[in-house]
Image 1 (spheres, chains in turn cyan, purple):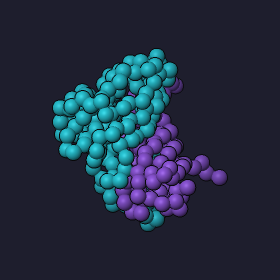
Image 2: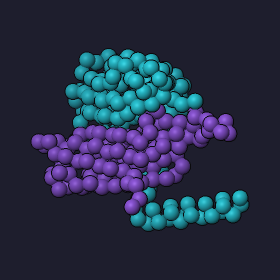
Image 3: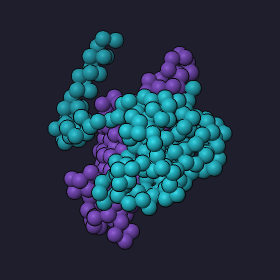
Length: 154
Length: 105
């Protein structure tokens, strides 16, 4: 058992060494600030405050959420968020009824469009909330997605 | 041949590049139980995805366990040309990482 864990750790460190040498682990990636508090917040407001600095958002019709009305499989719910709001810095996705509401945050480059497509896990029927940071303000839209078989596990 | 960890399709549509990436990763929530032992399978998920074009970060995604297994990600950006390379890299909570590049077609 000891030998295995010794070998495991030595292989892991050497792989890291090779990866670092090959430029795969740039300092930016390793030290980047993953918003831990946001990903531990168990309330929607808490998650929004931790990720975006505030839970006050302006409802906007310029944010479109494309997601199934009924998700057959809660483990894989395809969603697309698109917005015509100008100068979008961040798009954040929340699933209100999940144990930890925040699903993801996306930081957009200056030439990147307000468009994100990804797949999320939903534990049960819930509002899917998209928050967009544009011009320093937070805008949001939501869509109710019904889930027949929950996707959080257990 | 080893299974590719990241597959990327990058296509120009007019002046906009649409990137679609599919990543191989269990994205374990930490809530699932091992059916035999009854113990919880530890969380194992991609925390960060960085997408670059000519050394510029066009997208940085911060992910948690609510992103589905074998994550799919699609986004669009402008300022690139056909033939340019787009790079997608991820790092997870166990310190593992992967990276791949694709030519914009």
